[in-house]
Length: 108
Image (cartoon, rainbow, N blue to C red; front, side, top):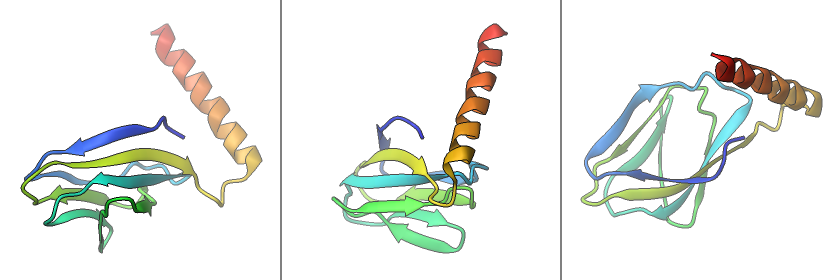
């Protein structure tokens, strides 16, 4: 899982459709400041709207995009959690693999 961070999406912007290609984590957004208007998280064919104080959880291995058609910026608390179908042994293997890859990047 990734560290907790605050993500801001400026008014009138969007994030183009993409995939994280990671199905062992779930992406979580807690709405902090959600202006009136269309602020959506599009996952596959489904559109979800952020709401202040509400948690939105998504599997971002599916193609997803965002949009903020509101007049002001949108802020969410962003973090990831392990997918509940990933076993403890699988989590350990994934963490070890990432540690090895990180070490290889530092050597270059």
